[in-house]
Image (cartoon, rainbow, N blue to C red; front, side):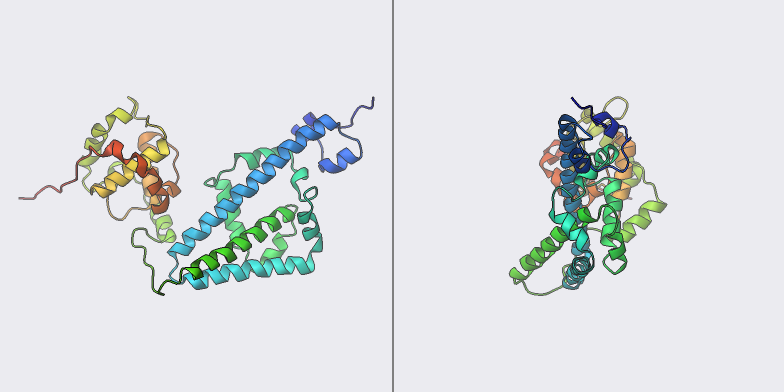
Length: 308
């Protein structure tokens, strides 16, 4: 019985460079058992990351689309930008298309153990995905073509091609509504750039969120059953219940009208020992906690003290 040159452990320890699982197996340099073990992890990570990235791209696009006052132009700009890159790749980089069309050579079986772990640890809200989306969406010109030449080009082509198809579908959905043209104003949230500037200069505490800072401690006493002796938030699911608390406090007039989602997240995290992100407190995401609002119905409506 031949002894394989490489093992699963060699892959896990990063000792095979450069790494291509298919090539190693064809050369009989890795056993069938280890081949299957590695391939399963790579396949799972590749598809998971592709799915997460696609969701992150949609979320990022919809946030900017809903904020835009030139929605049709914004949508058309994105569609034409993605189409330009895809057309250029198809005409100038046939090797990328060939790799992307072949599931055995689209890059998934070249992933290292470190990359597999990184892919599987990603979430739609993670910093890693935020950086990925930033680069991916700012490459809608010729500069983006160079980016496609990287090792992950087949992955990026698959993602870009599918997202382009989604954008075209989304445009069709908007056109089929046949609604009367007009400005769609969203006065409930500030533009993202304003939120970022505000949050970078002011690190709000729990009390800073309140119109009347004295009410901050009163509210903590009112909801004390959900807080540990050391101030940690106990109620599960923590994210959704704190979203519900925030919505209830807003509805009943306790919170300042001009607050960025970042400021609210920082204040809640500091007060309750959580790790929520600003996205949790964006209007659309915040509403996901409404099913837990009944836990806080006992909070009275805030009444500003009379100065008489």
